[in-house]
Length: 220
Length: 252
Image 1 (tube, rainbow over the protein chains, first blue to last red):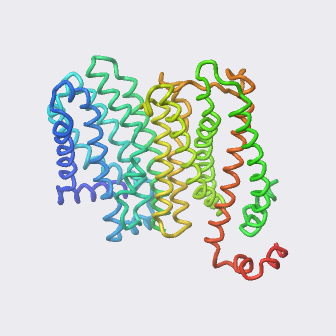
Image 2 (cartoon, rainbow over the protein chains, first blue to last red):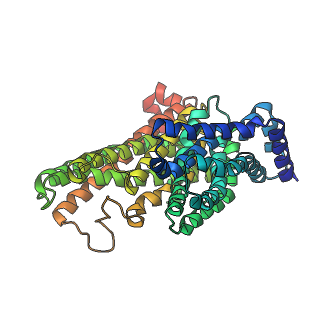
Image 3 (cartoon, rainbow over the protein chains, first blue to last red):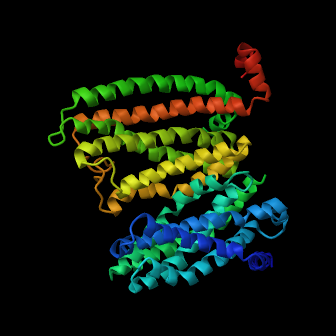
């Protein structure tokens, strides 16, 4: 019960304040637009760096949206109620992770084909791009939950959060961009996809427990 | 054994005993460091291919080993701190982080100093170097988190969680040279087969490795003593120690 209730509440909040889902997307688009301006608009160069640019933008926009996972609940006191509720805390945290994934990753998935055109990514790489997004973003949300939980009680957790979370995001970045680059060169990429799936399975199962423990410590 | 460990985990007893241990490990460390440096820099013959510049391995390799070892030790101590709530284990995690970060930094710097004449570049983005750099960032994360939280116990427990999560990077660093074909050479020293390094170089290297380990232990004990005094400053044994050191030592 608590599980669905938390998801429904977070989704309702996101619908009432659509900026929550749209702002990271605009930020994502902005980062992508900066690369051709800053590096070079030459097509062959863009094609080469496109997987990396795409995923780095995804990491950064996820990072921006992470704080909303626990911070508003901590400030208005509803987090205390969740901590005190009889429902197991890891279950509630898992619901928060899923809600965060639904709010941030689904818009990104829908916009991804359009954004990949901007970067000149060959259409043969599009299935790989979507597959890495589907399997990679749950890991981002789950690992991010641990980082947010650890910094929940702090006044200025923003920069610290990126310092904690970004090094842990590196495996996702490496294997996701590897898969997209392989697909763009018509090479098999199932190996990287399997690893991303394994990372997602591991982080979503264990991440909720670790984030729950971190929440208890950080708010004690 | 258990009894000893149990007593060792009690702050006043630890405080008294750690001074003696640190004195011993410190002096042995100095001796081994001198012997290792003499053996490595003067006694060992130059390499047939690299000449004298290979000698940086006597610092580089032990500090790279220590960078991995200290993080693992922090994660183990962190796990113990989270499961059994042992105060001393929390302090081990927090007190080790700056030492580990220094060793990681030393490994990166000595590696790039060696890389310039040998590989022709200060830095390459190969798997071993990159994962070692990520390790440095993990250390920074632990330090930053433990500094950001005001309450010392909460800070060290939060840092312990981060350590346990970040430990997945350790096997990646260790096996990166075997999993990916990289510029960094594979390991030359293994436990089970004959090492592909001459004895005249191996002995100073091992001497340096043991010296670095003892250095870590010594500095760790000193840092733990400081941290302990700061945390327990309102307790009776610290007050007694400050007011009448002689009597306090006799009582414990």
